[in-house]
Amino acid sequence: MTLDGVIQSDPEDDFKYTGWYFGYADDVTGAVIQERLKKPADLLLGRKTFDIWEPYWPTHSDFWPNVMTATKYVASNTRDSSDWQPTVFLSGDIAKKVSQLKQEDGPNLHVMGSADLLQTLFKNDLVDELHLMIFPITLGTGKRLFTAGTIPAAFKVTESQVSPNGVIIVNYERAGEVKTGEPQIEQDDQ
Image 1 (cartoon, rainbow, N blue to C red):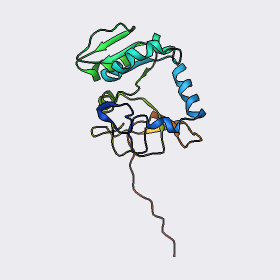
Image 2 (image 1 turned 180 degrees about the vertical axis):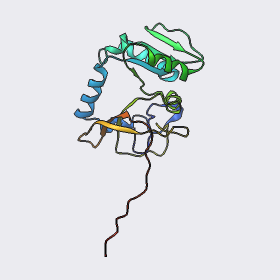
Image 3 (image 1 turned 45 degrees about the vertical axis):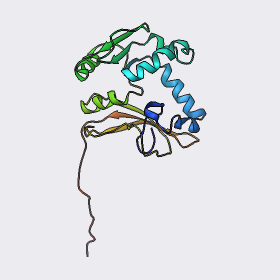
Image 4 (image 1 turned 90 degrees about the horizontal axis):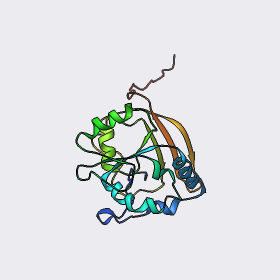
């Protein structure tokens, strides 16, 4: 995402800055992406992201073999089938269904893209970890990671590094409620 929280990068809705992240890719960000893609996980995707991925990944899976074996859980009220398997379509109360999925045994659920779905997850306190790459640019426009309705939540850093091109790579884990306090002003004894 950008410094101002934009996660959009595809040519959706005539987005002016399509592909903004490519100018900052380097060996470190590439290695982090490869490491993340090697981990076993199931995918939780919004329908728009799935529609983009469905024709692409089956013919490009040499870059990401796990995408073919991962169960793709797709939030959609308009689709209920796909030839790209294994895929499970979720409709209706997505928050309730994701909460139920999280209680099942199996690999972690990873969300990539899917800005609208992420808002539902944030509003319903269903995000346990964030694995972010924060790029040193602002765009001013585009879909953002955090929008109105995101609940207050505390996170702690579990891993971080900065790439040569200035990309902050940081993993956060949910750490309870937001802590508040008051400034402590020390007074000199005179």
